[in-house]
Structure formats: C-alpha cells, structure tokens
Length: 637
Image (cartoon, rainbow, N blue to C red; front, side):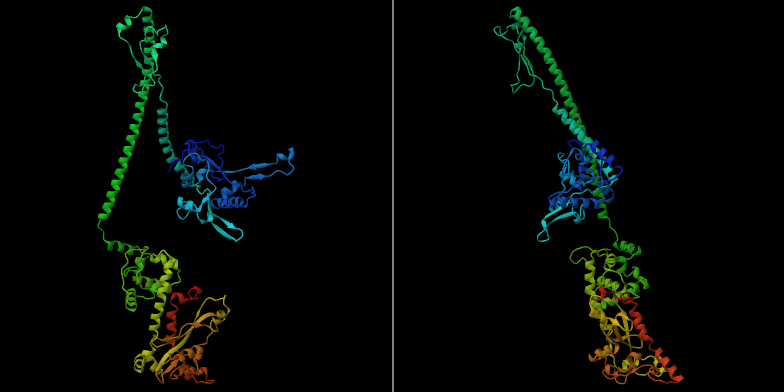
C-alpha cells in the first residue's frame, strides 16, 4: 500500500530524534498530501521512572532497541529528554523548577506493514509500543524477511522461578526505516494515489450537494375558497409518490372567463407568480442535470483511463507469456552450457568433479585430491568403493530426498578435506552445499571408509613370501652386500595441539623427540617405498620399542627367517619383537668404540640405502591435514 490517508489534525511539532537533515522536508511533504506518515509519535521518556517494574523494564528495553537500530541520531535526540521532579516542599520559588520535555519520532521511520495494520483507517494517530510475538509473525515483521529480529523481543521473567514467561513475549515496535531516498520515492508514489483520492472525494462532494426544490402545484380555487389571497393557488405535492418536482395545472379558458372579474384578476396574478417560481425551479433543475452530466463525463473519463491501463496490463501479460513460452520452446544444448561453465574457471561443483574441469591440471589435482591424474583418481574410487561416476549438471544441490551430492562427489569432498586445511563452510561453497551440517555428515560417513581402504593397502606383510622379497630386492643393495633385507623400519612423530582440559591426556601426548604434544607411528616399508605394515597412531609418550613390543605381541611382525630389518639406533636389540626373531641392522659405529676407515665408508653407504623410508613420510606429510600441527577438532578422524 502506497498511501495512508490521515483524517485528523497533525501535531504542530515536526522535530524528529533521527538526526537526519532531510527529515523535516520528508515530514512536510507527507503532510502536504495528507499522509499519516507526516505525523509524529512520542517516544517513552528514558529518564522518567515508574512504580510499576514491568512498565519500567519495557521502557528501558524500548530505548535500548531504539539505539541499536540507529545509535548516533537517536542517542543525540534522546539527550534532549528532561524529567526533573520538584522538591517535596513545593513553593513559588521551587515550583518553576519542574521541567519535563519529551521527544518525538516521525511515523515515516516505521515499516509500512505496521502503518497498514494499525493506521490505514486514518482514525489512529500513533502505533502501539509493542505487540504480541505471534501477531508479529502473522504480520510478517518478525524473522528473516521482516524488519525485526529475535533481539527485539521483550521477555517477561518469573521473578520466583527465574525463567521467562512464554506467553508474555512481545516485540517492541521501534523505528527501523531511515533511508531518505526511499522516503522520497514513497512520497512520489503516494502523490499519485492522493490525486486519485481527491478526484473521488470531489465527485462524492458534488453528489451530496444536490439542490432541494420546493414542490408546488397550481390549481384553480373555488369561489368559496378564494378570499383574495394568491398563496392559496400553490399547494405542496411532496407527499405524492408518483410526481417529482412541481407541476403547473391550469383550468380551461372558459372556466376562467366564467369567474367574476375580481376573482379572475386574482387568479391570473397567482398564475403569473407560480409560472415565475416554476421557471426558477426549472433553471435550477437544468443546472443540476448539467452537473450530473459533467460527473458522468468524469466517470466515463476515469473508466476510459482504467480500461486503457487494464488493456496495457493485458498486453504486458501476453508479452510475458509469449516470452516465457518461447523460452520454454527454445531447444538448447545442455552440453554446451556445461562446457561454458567449465571454461569459466573457479572452484565450483561442475569444474571440480568434471573430468575436463580444473583438475586436468596435475598440480591442482594433486593439491585437492592427492592424485596427479584425476581420471586415475576417479577409476580408483570406482574400483575400491564400487560406486559409479556421474557428470554433474548443476553447480548447487537442492533440498529433498535423493537430491544431494552423489557418492563419488561426497568421496571427492572428503579427499579435499584431508588434503587441505579448509573448513566446512568453504567446502560447502565449492561443492554447492548450503548446509554446513550436511558437509559434516558427508565427511563423517566417508572418512572411516577411506581409512579402512588405506589400512588394507598398507597391510601387505601377510601376502609376502621369500620369492617376492627376492624379486623386489634392488640391485644397489646387492652392490653393498645387503642381502635378504625384509623391510626398513622407522618412526615418525606428528605434532598436535596440546590438550589442557585433561591432565592425563596432556602428559600422554608429550613426545621426547619433538618436545611437544604429538602422535607417534611406526612403519615397515620395502626398498621401493611401498608400506608393508604400520602401527596405529599412538600417543607420543609411548616409546618406539614399546610400540614394537605391542605390535609384535599381536603377531603382526611375521617376516621370513634369517631376513634382516634396516633401522637406526633407536631400534637396537629389538629382535625379540619379531615372530622369527629378525635382526635389526644399524650402523656398526653406533656400538663399536673403534672402527676403521673402510667400516665408516661401508656404514655410510648402508645408511644411504635407507633414504626410501624417509620418502614414505615425505609423501605422508604432503597431505594437508598432516603437515604442521594437527588440530584438536580433527582428533575424531
């Protein structure tokens, strides 16, 4: 609704507490077109106090929300309030000290929905201080699409139980509209409605101002009734239901001639005066009919303009329907549109999942998914999880059953989560998922499955025999005299955030290697870099030998007889941890006090052959989540 007619008298005040320079001009413009938004409303006095605690709390909350919606202007306006009480003993000298001054706010600062609900009738002059929460929701002014939020809800508390009373939740109606530009646009729209309102009001005024004509008739009086008075010839026929207006009845000429001369003269004089009165009435009636004809012309003109507008609206509607029909009938190639979206670049659902999207670049594919070849990544996931790849056609997902990400898209999202340090909100933006909780559900579902497949791929020891070891034995090992090497053992500590809320966990995470909180893991790998066996991630306080004892007691360290294990000095005297008591070979100068130059050179060459176990951990730390410090919120994974 663009116009709210105001039927009462405006207040003389035009000052508003908003502090806007153009506010007074806006108020005057609304008053010029008789709009209710030109009126002002009194603000509850923030200095005044009330004996009723409920009223006092409502006033304080009203002022608080008033300042929250426009702090600077409203704060300066509220500073003008004064409410100074006189002393208890009032005298002539102290009575003049009583001062009370209120401030006002213009009604155009309130939302138009409130004005339509409470002031559209034109009888009310101000809005209520607050309304019930359910009524506010029904009006559409509370919530995401309304002008008020949950912060504007005043709750009445039960002082005994210290809990809010749900039936007493009200929304305080404070001004929220302060755009002068939009206000002038509303004035321009209201002016058009005001002009139409004036035309209708003038037409109604003219219809009510119809002149009243005194009905009369002229009849011939008998000789007994005519006593020389001409007024007796005129009689009122207002009680007649069939006749409208005065009628002029005249007897025949023969009857008039048969009258005595004196009566005939009186009759003719009365007839003359009656004819003059009839002429006056006829002239007035003609003017009234002319005015009525003008009104009909006005109505015809307004009706013609309305018909023109209706015809214009119908033409616009037909054009819109035609355009919609043409757009529906237009046959477009979805593949071309998808290709354009892929070429646009950026990280979105289509470019991330499509085989010819941004992941055609090996560096991008490796940073996001951990695979340099994206097509190999897709084939790997299809084979390992027995899921089917589908080309996406939308950049976002919609709500509803079976309308989310596909299984392979969920798995790719989880891979991006493991290879980056991004949060759920960024991942949701990339894959078109609006809900952060939905992203979390995808990750919680697929992270254990990825871990399970990783455990399967790194547990190859049970499938190895002596022929496999001889086939995989590198030539460089044979050149330095290393024969029958079963594996290379090494440990790694991954830094983690310190847990300070649990003293036991804090101490258990302490690592003697890193001198900080960490997780410790042991791996047994082949010379080619393939991991054969690994322990789970233990808390950093556990020693490497302790981990080997624990893992060997489970029968997991089953290497062939007489095969050696290459390790560093931390794994000395650990043969008892292996099922077949495999000896750990480490540099001899670690235990011998004296050694020759040939021994030193030989030990150096042996140590150089152990570089492949370090390559294993370099690949592991290339994963985003495992590089740097492991955060506490990642512990469940």
